[in-house]
Image (cartoon, rainbow, N blue to C red):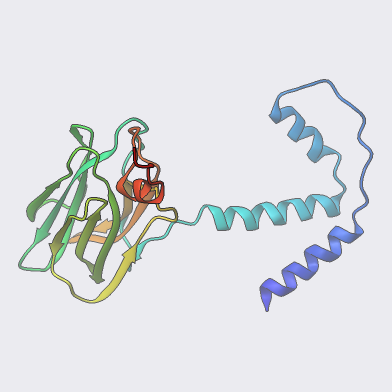
Length: 216
């Protein structure tokens, strides 16, 4: 109901805005042109522009996380040159909680995200192998993670308990490139996954299946 009223308000104001003539100007940088364009807008048009910008940003900047959340936010630093080549997860067996997580990019490990302690489990990827899906569960804290690769392998960490989730990329050629979420005293309280194209050139198995090469 609220979204419908916003759409009607935007539509009504857009109909009331008259196009303003604009004389040619010398080429300038984008920031100068943007400032000039905003300066020529009528108040109604300015309100419309800001409303649309807000709606767009809310949709495009939202990050999907799994778990109840709470505590300190974490995120792996961007790496535009190396693919994820491994994952480490620390689990506290007595509590059944995932304490922390760490990714390997190229030949180097990222910093550990989460709380200290737990038993470390490690899964290394083969050359050209990528993580393309993650399943898991949470109950207060993150309890269980299963990563699936484009070479048909998987690795599990912890024990399944509580609410379950499944995470996939939007496009079949995207792969896991980073993680983010929250942690507090006992371990991870939420987790999310960044999916992008592989950093290293070459087709993933999913791409190869989608684009078969002709037989010679």
